Length: 173
Image 1 (cartoon, one colour):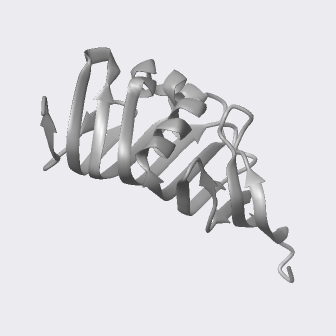
Image 2 (spheres, rainbow, N blue to C red; image 1 turned 90 degrees about the horizontal axis):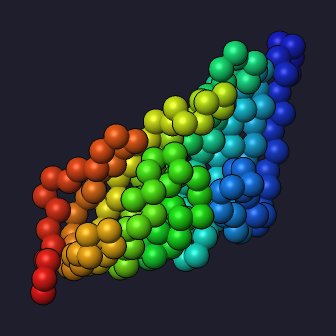
């Protein structure tokens, strides 16, 4: 640009996108890619994986040359909760956050808002903030042999805990 700052912008349409080899592929992605100075940003406005539809996704590395660069990911998606379960199982999240995460099976309709902060030098130092919106869904908690049905409400989860205020559902019937 005229100020002498390195700047590249590009648009990709209907392409597959994979964050890394151990993450699932997001198909039919439309995205804008920006390199500005010492930063990188990708903004996607579409894509899907196993029926889960991404409404919005953003990946940023604010300072590429940092001693410990950090990748910031944000995503909003809707669709069948089985698609969400498939994405979780196909990603490194169970290894990073605990294998019990992969043993939860959701069915029904869901919405997801997710923020990840991943230190690229130490991926195990991940920070996670997620909100799962369930609509007449089921949760099979396989480690406990428990089935919850008719779930409605919001489940909040982080790298440390899972909580919910106002979640409603049925157990044993």
